[in-house]
Image 1 (tube, helix red, strand yellow):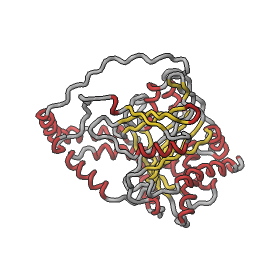
Image 2: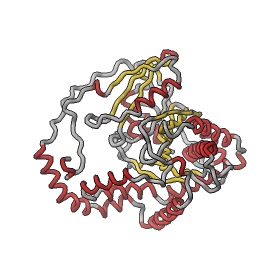
Image 3: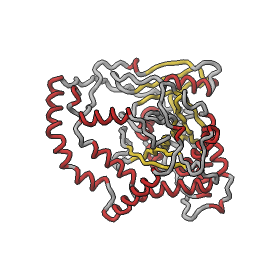
Image 4: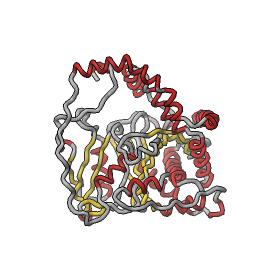
Length: 430
């Protein structure tokens, strides 16, 4: 808004041109994973054009075996990970013989707001908005927090979170983020991960975090920064969508903090520590509380919000060393124009003093760990990728007799169909 007197609002791009968003590129020979990673790192390093809709799709040709790839770039203000997974239901087919897509209906952009109208609505919002929003706070609190019986547990969770923040963290993973990007991935069988969960307890997400912990342990050991009691503090995004919001392409995500116990040498003990933390986060509704805090902060006047945002990003934050985000995907093959998608690898942006992050995505029985790093600050990207694989291997080698009490039974697969992608993801929520 002009002079930042009002909150940002969506409007159609009246000069929309599809050619600015659908791009083509060729992967250098021989077209293997290394060449794809290098080209993708160059593409992801280029910021999206802020004067246009904040998305791009790159069609990459030249992959070995006659394959091709789609590389997507979407700003987080438009869609979160689960919303992006829901978009796949619109892009992909469920079989190889689906036929050509139905031509879309004609689209005409809605005219943008006038300067006078924008200023008037901004002034009106600045005057009446805080009163209107403050009037809705009681309902916001009632809907965002647990029932009265759970408020004590919520407060206890805040105390536990404060204690975790006092644990010393690996400082070598923090630092300024430059313009270059490196991207790598490593994969594992979903059935293998579920077997570990059955043998040792916890959730699929607990097992994945334990494997990532081993990866960061290897990185710190190679850097000479692994010491007793140190942790890698991770921001763990969590969906806060309500039952009526599934299938909506939107951004409804909160986040909690988890200490990855990289100093613990015993893999079973590492998994148990992560189980304990994530179990407490769920029992005490910390994700709902973080989401509620974000909404309450939105009550502040827009100019103050803009000033606070600029100040926050100019000050390096030392609390969080990484991000680990997990988005369950469809567990059946998807197709485009008769061609089956054989691999799907996630990418997560980095910034705000966090030089390396991990995204997890599952598709058709495989789990992919997508690792993003600042190319000038994280030359040991492959050490992390290989360490994640070692983490799963050492957990798999543990006897089932070490399983803690209360291990969960395996989840059932969801049904198939045109909208099965969303149902499958909910059935395998982790």
